[in-house]
Length: 503
Image (spheres, one colour):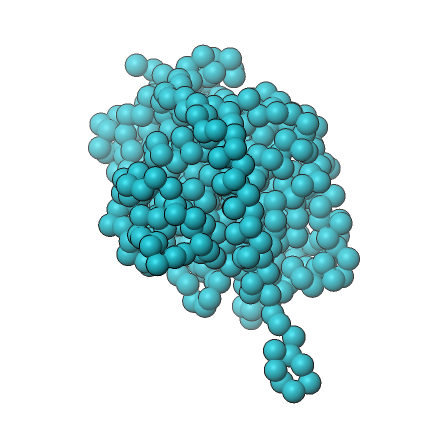
């Protein structure tokens, strides 16, 4: 057996490590959940030190459990939850505040201020994004505003900003301060056309350039880290959704994938040209490698698999997330119930920061199974909305959709997704596409694989879910979904008081 590649997959709720051999087989994996903090309604935070310690622990664990000597590991690739924002002290290496997670909505008023000051068009043109609290830019400003003395220290380069990839490489590689094109493109500060930090947006948010990382390609050696006494190059880096696109071998224009994780993220490779969306999607960098970049259109669903976690943890309708499929199959339909999981607003194509979760169509006969099935179906409906927007933007019809992420194991959900899209849904043998993409990038940089053709030849298909629903039934279900979404829009938008103090 040839060399091995280790992928570190730092996600929103877990830190994972997966060891691949050169034939792309998984030879070991380990994962560890870490704490989610909710200081106020709509706020979400992580402890950056816990992110690092949990990632370090699973990295060591998977190597120890697999029995593979560290000297046979050719490279390490990192993939990460995107947009989550960390600021730390250069000297001490300690965070100055908890990580503000991509889901956090605390900076929505700062986004509103940007739009009121006329920056919405510039943000869209330069960064390919829409103004939203989802991205890193306003999170950086918030921390700099709230932590005394932080902005002055950042201007001297003594406080550093990074998304989770930067934070991990800083800790693993002894003070290397870098990011890659894919993660930079998610900050709402990076000009994806000129490939540089945008000076106008930095001024608008009063963010010192000295605190920003150097932007690198997604496949190159950034540094080395010691693992059980052996030095291993860290040689691949990409945000989780771009890594999954790469891991699904979507190397050509028009190829698409959807990742069903905490959120859902549908990306289509648009090649060397950035496609500006007119339907609420994001234009982002898919990959930077070999001196060039590829672009992608992306639709983001904030709450995908997380709606099942909510049913389990807050509503106590499930004991295990995997039970959702069992309960969904116990009823023929939802009994007219729709669940819109807009817990932290709605992403593409609506982009409503003030939307909130809604359940409609409840009757006296509504049972637990109906609500669980409605939650399952909501994941597929939201993905359908993204595909429709993507096809309008590109003029390309989706002939099939590759899927990955934890929820793609759910055969009920995948079949319902195929029925809603009216095209095949393709699930790979190796469903850990995010980690596999990070491994591909690292392995390419270190000679484990020679080119994309070799990688594509090794990719294996598992199951194809073919659409089987009548067109009339499909249209009726989708019509009900759109009515339900309308009920959720703008729900949490602040209401103005009248002169009598009444709302």
